[in-house]
Length: 267
Ligand SMILES: O=P(O)(O)OC[C@@H](O)[C@@H](O)c1c[nH]c2ccccc12
Image (cartoon, rainbow, N blue to C red; front, side):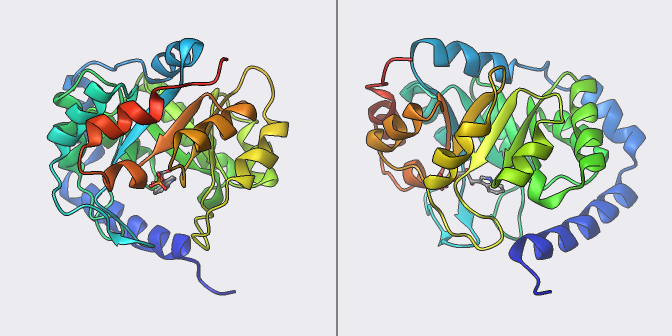
């Protein structure tokens, strides 16, 4: 079988985690997590925002494997503040370095410059990374069903809940969605980008929305550019969105965020 980009990421991430553990044992990370800035309610903030408008998870994203460098002028704290002033609900901060030019410090910097809850956007394979997320200040972690077993997904979710964090469960097809629904988290992220091929299609949300039951909260992720895209996805039940690139490409991130959220279709 050919190796996908996701397989490659997993391989280096497991090595990275092993090296991190050797440098700083779990007990130390746990102590840092206990001393970290208190958890901000991530899911709750999205539910609230979705009652009257859209929930927006705004992503601090410097580069991606498919697009290379997205934004030259990149200061996580400044960008996070622009998102907040523009009306975003939550932050997502890429902490992966090899593929996304992110950094763990970006998460702490961005979050502490705002009052928004923050998602650690990374590829999670070990409860060590979950404790580390909390130590960095994260309020939510990402669980990518395409890249983990059911057992590991449940273990990561339990670890997140144990720290008082939320978990965003990411799916890209019907099989992954079915597996996601065996977990407890209400936050279901449908990624319009296939992480194995990097192709993006909003049909992913359109199709999978049919199988997201009441009681789960649908978040449409990736490839969203315009208010019309959001209105389109909202018709399929998505009241919250995870957006990076299209906002990161704007000179005035605050104004672009405000424009995107200006005219929500009624809930
Ligand atoms: O930049 P975009 O197309 O607006 O997408 C944001 C976000 O959905 C995307 O960065 C993403 C979704 N799931 C991921 C998993 C890993 C890394 C990145 C991602």
